[in-house]
Amino acid sequence: MPGTELKAIIERSRRVVVFTGAGFSTGSGIPDFRSAEGLYAGEWEGLTPEMILSQSFFYLHPDTFFEFYRARMVYPDAEPNAAHRALYRLEAAGKLRGVVTQNVDGLHKKAGNRLVYELHGSVWENYCMDCNAFYGLEKILNTQGIPRCDRCGGVVKPWVVLYGEAPDKYTVMGACREISNCDTLIVAGTSLSVEPAASMLDYFHGKCLVVVNNEQTPADERADLVIRGDVAEVFGRIGI
Image (cartoon, rainbow, N blue to C red; front, top):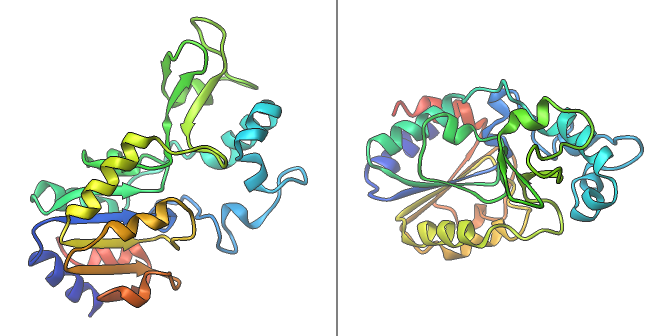
């Protein structure tokens, strides 16, 4: 059984890092990006989601950006699923040395994990572009149109990496450090189609690479174990 094999690998590992993507959160009711029902499957007022979620579009059409963002990108009521809870237990047991995630939903931290590297930021963190004042998600949800800073009136921007923006260098450095130092890397719920995140696997030189995903990924050929299936179901079966 795939769950049994994965559990055995984890049990004999000393430093596990898990690299997660959108498929890790579909079990929490958050759609992925590229499936038939995913975020990128449809248009918004004749525009593709990739266009709207770009840095240039944000600056040129912030009103449309925030309309789309509130409707499609934010899921404040989502709860961690079995996969998130399994990673929390792994960290509590001293096995998990870091979670590197492409997700912006904040569910890893909501599940209790502390060692989380959010490569693309988080919808739960927002800041004023003029004075750097910090705001939680409620600032975005409880306003209409373009959210403005209470202190200076500047635009409040989500701490989410848009197309055309570079990820935070310190987050990337930390993620690469953990990947390079782990003995087991589990890639779960990601197609590895987005750079620079996908290239971070090149830093892995450990003993065992595991891929858990519904579809084929570029890492399958070099993986020691490939599990096809729903991430929440797979991690729920390992009984950690």
